Length: 513
Image (cartoon, rainbow, N blue to C red; front, side):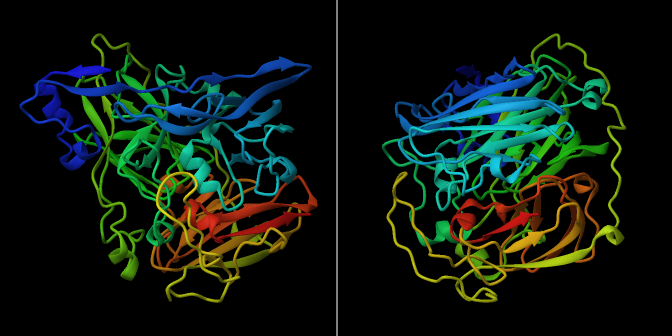
């Protein structure tokens, strides 16, 4: 726990309403408490018989987020979250997952190109007390990915309680780039989530219909499971691997002194070149790697700024009136550079080569329409039915019985919605027929965004992606090659990554065969 002097406390609150998510103290008090940022343990695995072997245990635990209170949580190999798993392109890996939760779960390797039968989707349930053993080869370039529960109708709840962790993939190309790469020193994971709590310290998950409509928004920020986090850089440059692991909240990351930073990577790995920005939006499940310069030695806060009402991703109509979404200024991480910082190398301008995929390579275009209930542009009817539930902790989740739709139908594990021929390149056109943004995620691999309403993506989205933000009323297109792993019996998923939407029907299945 770090104690700040009064003048430093005033600086900490300089980001407008950022202090609302920190423990509140009056200016008459001399000190404010910040918590040292937790760095997840690094799991490199054991090399045996030519493969890297990893072990995860999904378990229950207790965490201390609020002073004097305990929170029942879930985690992998610990009380909350899981270790950072580190793979290398080309390596064979073997992973065993023990389920000691007392309830079923799954583990999805988000963003990884793996066979459908080891993807960890909702059909690959790990019963309580069982062990899931999977083997696959790492077949993609360096980047930041993650793993999390993907249990049918309970993904949101289990992720909210803690079942997620980061994955880092390295390759020969990344090893040759002179980038910050000392994990926990100048290469820092930031798993950003918002949470809300009951008076007894337990998580307050779904408690009203609005929580399902908008997705669950919290009033406190956790970074790597740390409340009011602080990190003290030791080097002039630090690489932050930012993962938006929130159930529904988007973030508009910036620094409260307006400083520039260099964005070097998106969901699927490096961008062609480093891009200088002063702010960066990430929807749920999106990732980015940024390099920040601390050579001036000044303290600064990483914050999230409000997303403007004029943004194409801002909610419209009754969704805007139902609940203000992503309109707060939030303090994410306080940064206090140490004295005598170690000098870092200049960030390389050129990072990787990306071959743009041409529309002429696609053999077909598939069209998907995302729709929501309450008369908001619904294109059809799902399986119907309402849900009821109460406020409170893990057991109080409401269900809406399939009112969130893709192409007029709700998710059904017994139905394969689409069948794709292995080796084909396709364009997927996603229309958002609702009044709020949806982050659309596809399992199996990475894609390239073609356009939104005919407009090419910004340079920060010009690399490979697995999650696509689609604003209300927008139509977006991406192009993707479905290589490897033919399996006509086992499906991959496509879905909205607002987890309450996914759990309530905005998901479908496709096979590669």
